[in-house]
Length: 478
Image (cartoon, rainbow, N blue to C red; front, side, top):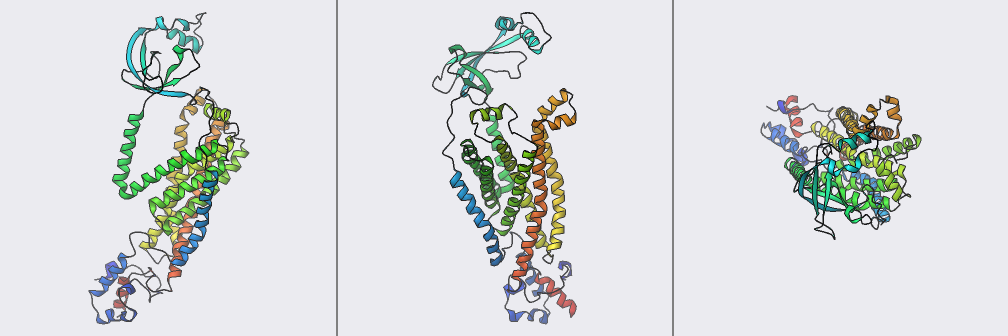
């Protein structure tokens, strides 16, 4: 009757210690089989079996002390780093009126009327009538068709209620509709009629709705873990907003700030989402080692490839406003922070896989656990590395289109600093990701095996053999 439930028994040591001992004293071990009761064996066996599944099995006290001896100093160093580097706030500066460094207010389109483009664009006609240049063609096109004259009311700030007009060309990528919310830039030093201009549309409502759908989906599927994941996400955003960004702007080393901030995010997010357990601690250790490897590789190759980190208008503006910021260090900080999220995913997956393999077959040794875990990891690597590459390619798609238009060779494209940055970012992050799989799998296999070895000498702590298997073997022996 019990043979369908039996699993292969590892060459049978530790027969004096099993979950069966939780249910009855030492002296009663021989009574069940001696009576030949068919009901007791499976009952006790299923009792022991039920304790070896579900949440991560608690590890021994000695092993918890070893893990704590590694993680407690690390967590203490992170707390000290946060205290030492914590900024007093974003340092003030005089606005330049360029790019994002402009004073903005909220506005609303209160009226839109059709007007003849020729009547509002007379000054844009090229004096020579030359249409061979893009500027000339745009000026001629601006004289044709119907334009829109939008009246915008300022709805925030000290001049709330003030109105101004904006001319929208027929080929403009962004058209305005009556009742639409907009973002307006304010230039106090400009002539009064030119102080306000529309810079963007207000997207708060669709973004809020999308965020709400995301939160509902996470909670509906993840339940309590989904709630904790959302809280961890909020904490990560707070650390990024109130520590990492202001500390870098204040002049702290971007690499040090990124390491401390990323470590804080990692500790809070992993323990909050997965609980304070040895399983989570192994994932933290694997993430930490992989993150250090990523930082080391990034530092070496960013310096070797002479990447300045100052490649577009936004980074140029940052460098102009805060020249003391190390832009190459800022690039490296971005590599580390960007790699953290994917590393968390891989290390938690690998640790959980090894733990579940141990629960499914408690007789597996460290080598067998590693071999089985690494097979799962290889599948994960194949999908995640491709995901990273496609994510960076998607972000750089407009840039790649520009190179395609210019008919540049692949070598020329890859050698340009804009693309080389993304290549280094992608490859360094991917190497750290690939390394995280065997590192975390080894750590998890060693911890599980060391725990079994440590627990083997104490009654009631070894989980290698369900009682049902032992009972079944004794019946066969009879």
